[in-house]
Image 1 (cartoon, one colour):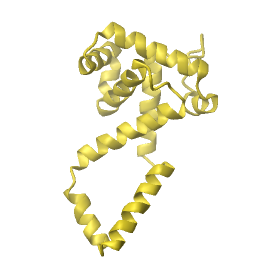
Image 2 (cartoon, rainbow, N blue to C red):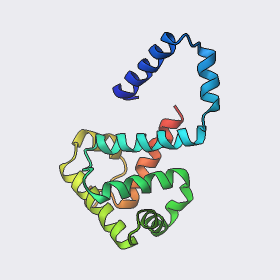
Image 3 (spheres, helix red, strand yellow):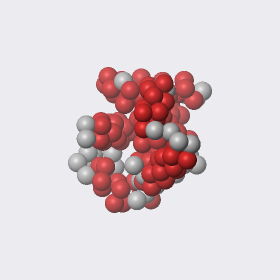
Image 4 (tube, rainbow, N blue to C red):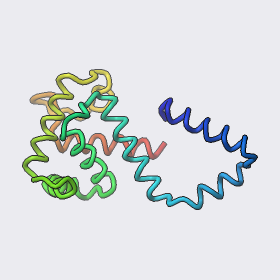
Length: 155
C-alpha cells in the first residue's frame, strides 16, 4: 500500500468518525459495492505502481499497451500461451494494429531497461532475464509482472 493510499484510508476513517459512522456501517457499505469492479481498479493501480516504480515513461503508447497486456493476462492467464492473442486484444482495445502494439511494448521495455530505475528492475526481473541481452522479451516482461502480482495476492 502506497503512502497516498494510506493517507486516503485515514481520511475516510476520519470522515466516518466525524459523521458518527461505525465499523458495521462501513462493512455494509463495502458489501454494497461492486467488488469485482473494485478488484479490477486495484489491479490496474497495482500495475501502474509497478511500472512507475521501474520508471517506465508514461508519455509513450507502450506504457498503456504494457499496462493493458499485463491486466489482460492477469485476468486470463491462458492468453499468455499465444502472445499474439494478447497483442490483438490490446490492439482492439486501443484501436490500433497488433504490429504497433508489439513494437510499442518492445520500445517501452527497452527504454525502461536502459533508463529506468535499476534497483526496481532487479527487484522484479532478477530471475527472469533473457541470457543473451539481459533485457526481458515482451512475453517475459508481461509474464514476470503477472507472476509478481499473483505472488503478492497469496500474501
